[in-house]
Image (tube, rainbow, N blue to C red):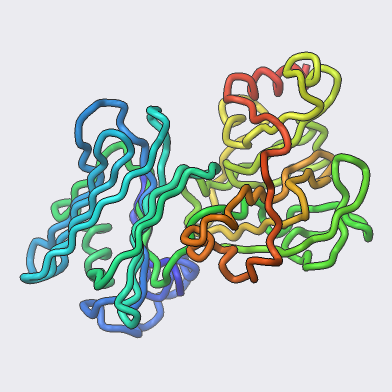
Length: 364
């Protein structure tokens, strides 16, 4: 089932049989609502306050029963403090992420596996390599009724205006590098355009240098269609697109040309799709509660020819050197020796105002 609940600025959703069945007839309850979930993850995406004081992000206390009580706070400097109470048991943990002194968006993931007596708390900046993970022992699990009440009963919860969304999964969710192309994104291969979701290890894809590169691995993930996972439609003919495509906000376009080289001093630049939302080149789209993304791992951090323009392949950086993050990521399914090391990002990344200026110039 995976994702069971989602709450954001416009939606309060809970399905015991999974949000993938949203809009369908409610299935029968297959588990005890009050039983602790054997495995699960609470994922919270939030903006970090620029003020030098603690910030209550999320709180929950059941009004009519003895359930789990939860408190999630952000502290100055990128720290996160999580406290859970269940009966007489209290679980307290904290983790710190260096945000560089900026009010960035961060994603917090609390996961547990009761059979292994293990858990994990992580905090990361989506679209970057800034991530910290802390292994936990004997964590407290949430039960479906906790999140159902949190979603639907405003009296039982505290939710900061800075929180972009909170979601509950019945699985231990991965952290770190994430896929950002929808499955039907057309990628140029040695056999012509092929949907990205159907590409496999060994397929040859065209790159910005005019040659072909083999696909080493392909990854997929279904996530809440919210926050830094919100689908974005890139409109044609901006940036040379032959037809619109849908990607995630952290997917970066690879843009080149004489104007780019003159203005930015580089043959190509990277433009995050989310930076284009305040212009005409991109618009967020309303979808089902969940969206499935995929991405391709190439020998180098490279550019894929996609519907007439170029998108970057998955940038792994030096994640192989961080065993804790590697194990907790989608890449943990692969043998470490089969993963390449991308020592540095292939091209400079534009800031938002630079990206909007470039889009306007190319549309003129």
